[in-house]
Length: 196
Image 1 (cartoon, one colour):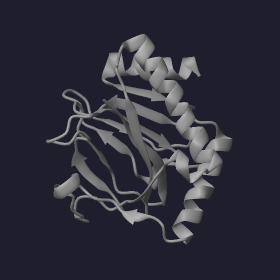
Image 2 (cartoon, rainbow, N blue to C red):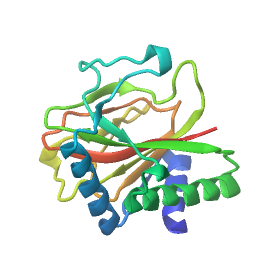
Image 3 (cartoon, one colour):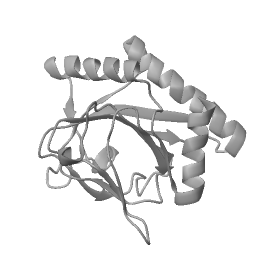
């Protein structure tokens, strides 16, 4: 896994955004995708909000995905496997880059056809605990016409990232504005933040 960690770190140092094309293996992606479908069938997904605590609101003109928070207490072996990978990544980042990450939070994110998320930063205005954003994609057989790219706004060159299976994206939560372009197919990811 160290090679994949280094892909994220090197990309971040060079372009402010790290990308590892095969951070998650196909088997784990498939199990996580199946787990999300079960959660959806049980109507356990919630409409995603904007803001935090007392400022939380739901505005479908800005954001239209549905989410479900991961937790080792769920005793789901595939959620736990994913979160253990994040444990190892945090240890690696703290040892090699002195990031001082203390915790994290992750949720499934499901965009149905026609859904999007307009341009935003991931760090809250009144809470700077989110340090790094991490998005891992679970979409098999994704092609360009399916849309749903992560569009990262850079000063000199915007970058559109296709949400293909196994790919993980890593960037500073307070540095890069980004958006999810309209998707033409159901689009699934595990999205989260490394926190201080």
